[in-house]
Image 1: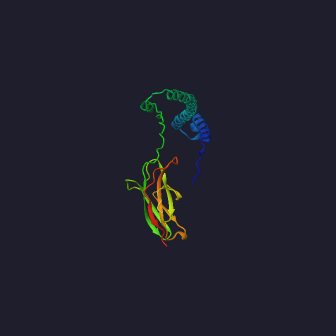
Image 2 (image 1 turned 45 degrees about the horizontal axis):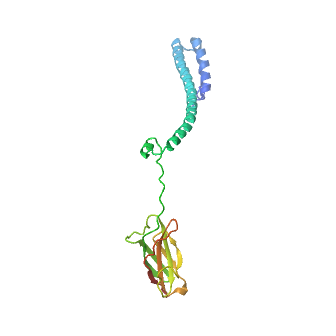
Image 3 (image 1 turned 90 degrees about the vertical axis):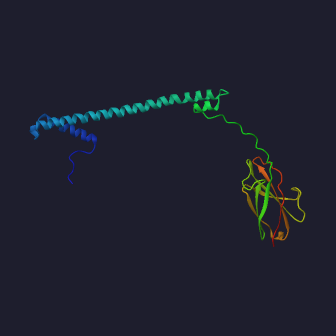
Length: 220
């Protein structure tokens, strides 16, 4: 493939075109061109030169416009912050009006987390060997999802012949956030009756009433 006689770089092309056109149009017949060739060449060169200058001006103008935009933004932002704070400081402005300004509504303080008032109802779903698996739901429901504002369910356990009336004599097993839990007994507990006690606890550590006792036995 023959090498192009024209340079690739635009700056070098400009220099080449300027020199070539100047010489060719000064005496076209001396270089084998016609007067018409010279006229056509000069016309296209002039148009291209004008386009180059316009592009340079546009680039300079764009840089200046970008700089001016950033300067104006730098002046506007602190003013917007000041005015927004001024609006925020005025009591009684409705959230709808604030939304029209693009401001967030005022945060309403959340009320105190209530103490759980309902009871978890447990069921022993598996008693295989030394392992017990329990599930529970909120009273009056079938979903294992815990009530709103409840962090989880506390499980307490008593091993022995006498059912508990409260948590006296019971051991704390843990607090579980899901509606199921498993427990592995010691071999020494095999054959003994066990009593599970459950109650809800909220995110402040406050507990609700105890649910019905779940009675089971550790299988041998």
